[in-house]
Image (spheres, rainbow, N blue to C red):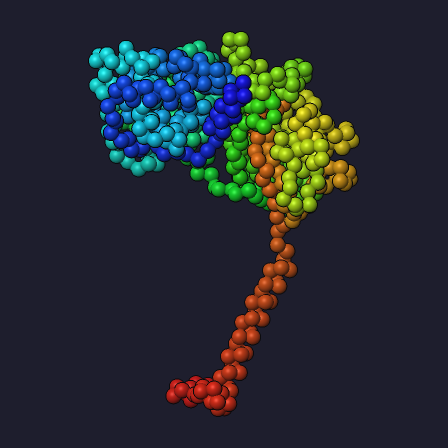
Amino acid sequence: MTRRLDVIVWVAIAIAPRAASAQWMDLSVPERPVADAASIAAGRRLYEERCWFCHGEDGDGTGPVAEYLWPRPRDFTLGSYKLRTTSSGELPTDEDLFRTVSLGIPGTAMPEWQSVLSEQERWQVISYIKTFAEGLFEDEDFDPYAFIVEIGSPPEGSTEALVAEGQPVFDEADCWECHGSLGRGDGERASELTDDWDFPILPTDLHTGWKIKGGSTPREIYLRLSTGLDGTPMPSYSETLSEDDRWRLAYYVSSLAAPLAGAPATGVVITARRVDDSLPTTPDDAAWADVPATWLTLSGQATFPPRWQIPAVSDLAVQVLYNATDVALRLRWDDRFMDTVSVDSALARREGWEANDMFPRLFPDGARMRATHPDGVEVMFPLRYAGRPELPHFVYGSAGQPVDLWRWRADRAGGPTAVELRGRGASQPPEPHEPESQRASARATWADGQWTVVLRRPLTTDDGAREVQLEPGRIIPIAFHVWEGANGETGLKMALSSWYFLHLRESARASSYLVVLLLVLGTVGAEYGLIVWLRRQRDSGWLSRFGITPGPDDARRPS
């Protein structure tokens, strides 16, 4: 059991959001050595050491860890693979397998192995994996090299023109039915899709470029549009779209991933902008348009049971405004489904705080659905922070280091819009503040696969040290938790951030600019006076003792 948990912890790390790896097609593949009995035997030893826990002893995708993973590990016995350079339904080439083993598949539990296994070892594992579908790989009629997809060149035109021409192709090819009208994975068919093994599968949110299988460049996406992703509902469009239209569509899809992939690097500081007017209270207020968004990376809560290795939300945009009395945070994240239905509190507590398993089984007893809970988000602050490096635990603090929380939940439309809570550790749910101390409010909208929530609270309260106090000019730690109800998330089963720092930056006073101006004028005046004095001393001959005498042109220069 201990080894199984170790594997799951390692997998949770492997599937966490990470910087984009090399593009699948760009990986340089070395020449493959001959696959003989010795290399297959070596591959089997490596497989039994590294792979069988997920893919199973027989390569059928039913290893002991499989029931904790989603998407499920690949069944090698069918010879069906997502990432290929071959036509839909065909076997992958050896080079295709090498690329996938080397780079992994972002957004799944399949990690990259190029930093762990040598080239020779990767070839040996591939030799062994192919034996699970030996009859297919040895059949000349299924020779994958006879079905390689040709990749030509995109049609002439600028990138901007190709993106614009690709949008109508997206609509005409009915891509919106699964991926949604804006590509956030919220299409009308999204909730009913299953893979070839009858497990639920979700269309990719095309705005999270790091999750696009095989890479997010137009060339990579063109290949996927041509080959399809076997085993999934993603078909090949080689028969239904022309080559040029596939290129146009590829450029459009690639452009959807660009805003998030190109979001500004944030470091660890979220800067709040001060305004003199009243704060916006609605998510669509025009005042938010000029406020820079800070993008944060979220990962699954994998510290306390029930650990959660498959969070649905991986990116959160944060904007902050404040005035003399209040602070407002605008939080935005992609969510395919609008989950507003409340659930039985005992069920939520059992699933979110009192799970028997360290890692919950995702589809226990053959079930194909998880319980659905309301969507939600909360902001967390240390209750006491004096600028020291010691911070509370990022999962609800501890008894000695409590945290304050401002929580919004989508099932509270008829009740409090936000709730303030106190957390004293992950062993129990946070407790709400007293009713008279509830000052937070929230407004939220869901549209086109995205939640936007505005949380607002006074900067300071009358409760002093019993509540977090936000003072302009200070920097205070801040963290975030997000729940996607359709993904079965509740309680400790959530996406979370590490600690960031909120800086309530104060605007410079007008007197500050006057002081700077006076300093500049004073400096310039002093320098000019010094120059005039030195020139007069030189002309009088007083500086001759230092070897400084008037030049021939100085006599004509007025003093």
